[in-house]
Length: 267
Image (cartoon, rainbow, N blue to C red):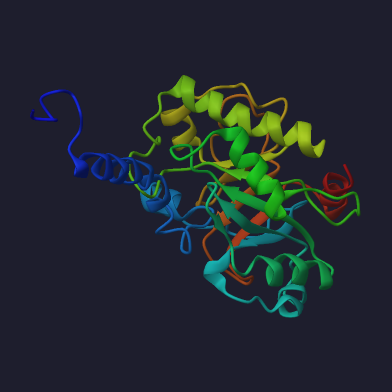
């Protein structure tokens, strides 16, 4: 009797099925091929361009910056000497990448007297928001009540690997962000900042106003002023205004004097 005809698989069929299952499971990890070079704003600059920088230091703003593994080891004493008062450091991406420079950057900033925080590069196409929040917290993205640690930030921007909205419609992407921020709040007892651009927020979340009263805004815009904010926020907490400058990595202003940065760190 032909065993295949009788409904039994040929000897090689089982092995092929197992191989197929492995192949299906693999693409999610392939999404980390650019993780070493992804950092806050890489895709925003690519999609939206650079229209300039502020003409002068805005009054009442506090200078800071953000870094990732892309910068390599940072000379934190030099950064402090150049005026850095706060910094954000990339900790994780998705659920499969940890910044190999994170320890040197995060702890080094603290040792230099700079208020520091960690951020997570979102990957809504590879795993859920809650899962990524937990991965972020487990790999440096938590918060401590030491007066020098800022709450974590979710970097949600154009997808560097494919569809700019990660293949999700506005309702599903909004739900993903809510899943991340809700989990972070429950686990850490602090609200995460949301890093994004107005143009991406409009395109991919339908310009939802859902987070304006719960999560501080870290806005990316490379121009002479902040410009239009995403719906729900009346002001930004941080403005990432330039891709480079006197400090390592991207240049930022906190929207207020140093005392406000310290207040955010203290909770």
